[in-house]
Structure formats: structure tokens, C-alpha cells
Length: 102
Image (cartoon, rainbow, N blue to C red; front, side, top):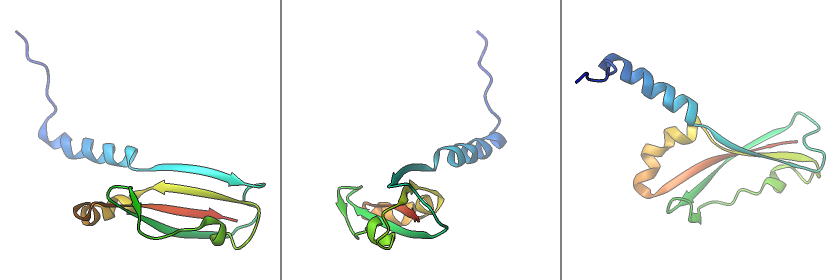
């Protein structure tokens, strides 16, 4: 019986790096009104406790937009959030990034 080919050990770090780079960022985009009309960007980090069950801090996108009626909100789980995971997971906490473009 012929054995299936296996990846050499030197390829495993490369495969892990590609997997992390391609699946690490998840985002959601929402436009309010006409969407962003200028060049203003406000960024904040939202933290959750018990793996997203309870919010730790309040991030208000409407307040971040400065009272404007046209802006866009982008919530994402990106590279910085992934780098924070080893420190947050023992506390059962997670984070996400909130970006408001005006």
C-alpha cells in the first residue's frame, strides 16, 4: 500500500503563517446617511468579557462621529486584536476595533 505524501517539517511554519494572515481579519462595514464625506477617522477598541457575553467599555460610534449624520462604521477583528489574544484569553476577554470615518 502506498503512503500519501507528507509535508516536510520546514513547510509547516510557512503554512501556519499563511493561515494566520488570510483568516485573521474579519470586518463589518455599515454606512449611516450618505456615508463618509470627509477625511476624519476615529478609532477605538471595544473589550468584551466572558468571550463576548458582557461589554467592558462603551464605544459609541455616534459620539465618535462628532454629531454628524453621515458617516461609516467599521468593526473588525484584526492583527492587533489577534496579538492581544494571548493576554486576554486567560481572562476570558476578547477585543475588536471600531473605526468611524466621517
